[in-house]
Picture 1 (tube, rainbow over the protein chains, first blue to last red):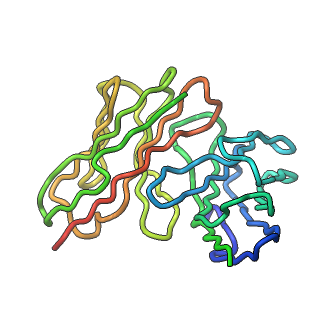
Picture 2 (picture 1 turned 45 degrees about the vertical axis):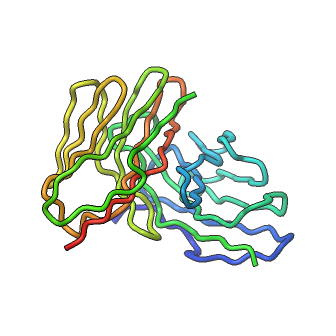
Amino acid sequence: DGGITQSPKYLFRKEGQNVTLSCEQNLNHDAMYWYRQDPGQGLRLIYYSQIVNDFQKGDIAEGYSVSREKKESFPLTVTSAQKNPTAFYLCASSIGWDPRYGYTFGSGTRLTVV
Amino acid sequence: EDQVTQSPEALRLQEGESSSLNCSYTVSGLRGLFWYRQDPGKGPEFLFTLYSAGEEKEKERLKATLTKKESFLHITAPKPEDSATYLCAVQGRGSNYKLTFGKGTLLTVNP
C-alpha cells in the first residue's frame, strides 16, 4: 500500500544536539512538506519542496534544515539553534498543486528535549 | 496572508445529537478548502476538498458546505467513533502548494 512513513515515532534530544527526522513516501508525489504541531496551535509550515533538489522555507524555518536528494525522501534536521524543539512533527506529500486530494500525512514524530 | 479560524475550540455532544463546526477563512483567491480528521497521536486524515461557494460534499455522517467566507462541517447523529479533532485548511492561488491550517475543533461524542 502507498503511503508516508515517518521515523522514529518518538525521539528524545539532549540540549545542543542535532537530530534528523525521517520521511519517506512511495506515492510518487512531487511535493513534500514538514509541519510542526503544538498544543492549541494550528499546523505551522517549516519547509516544503516541490521538486527534487529544490526546497523553500515555510513560516517557521529558523533552526531547521532539510534536503531533497530523492523524490521519495525529505528528511528534516532539527538543529541546536531551534530554541523550543519539543513538538509533534508531521510530514506530508501532495500531487503537485492539484488540490483535489489534499495532502497525505505521515503518522508523525514526537520530539522531546530532555 | 491566508488565515483560518475554527470554532468552537471544543465541542461535546451526546451520541445522536447533530451539530456543526465552523471554519472562517480569508484567502487571496481560493484554490481549495480542506477538511481533515486527526486522532490523538496520529497524522491528519483527508476528508474533503471544496472549491467554490455553494458546493457540498458528504461522507457517512459528515457533510461539508462552503460559502465565500466560511465552511461548515455538519455532523448528523454522531457516534463515539466520530470523536477526533477536525482541522480546516485553505490553499490560496498565491501560495504555491501550501496549505494554511486552523487550530482545529476537538469533538467529543459521549455514548
